[in-house]
Length: 288
Image (tube, rainbow, N blue to C red):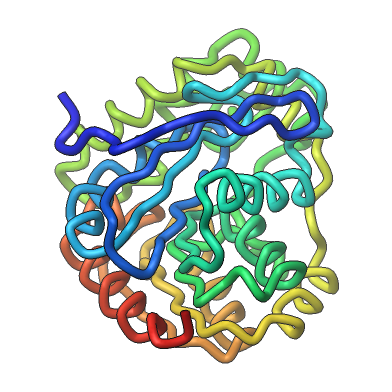
């Protein structure tokens, strides 16, 4: 059972790919909670929506590859530009002029794209555990993704051949790295379950999509004038805290470091994250 059902929902069609969105609440400003890597769908915001919707108008949507959205097997829909355009399409479909963007992990790419290309639509942007190529060696890496590996240990499981043969095993390993905090069994089980709702083929297509390099990301940061908040755990095993520090510096934003937190603190420490997001949204609401 969901703690809060959507007040309305619908679909947008972007280049032939259907994406499902939901709206909660009627307050101001509007918060757009972006998708992350398509290994999970928008339910990963389930600890944020009920609280934030009591104060704001909240939008979520499933990115391509999971949830109620289509699961294309071509890489094009997963590129940073179509992912960014999808966020704008949801704003358009819901009659939203400007919004506070809230992103987790890889969703930071889509948020930065919107901030740089449609600054008139962004009141502010809150990043949680951003996963970006802003510093060398900032993200967890294993052997080459597209080559067979003789190892099945650790990050060697981040490999297309392993995914195709041991998808659930990869999910269990990956989310054990996302949730490094003790007593995270429920959060890991939720995420593994959501990962099983898609296919390794869809995630392989996403893996082949182009990723913005450091120069591109820094150019986007320089083009945006919206206030930013970066929330990052100091025990993040997926995206180093150095990435959050670099993003805050590049955008002139505020960095909040959560002691003992892993990669998805919005699930593991939702009260702290919710209050930070609420305070940030209230602080930028006068720009609406």
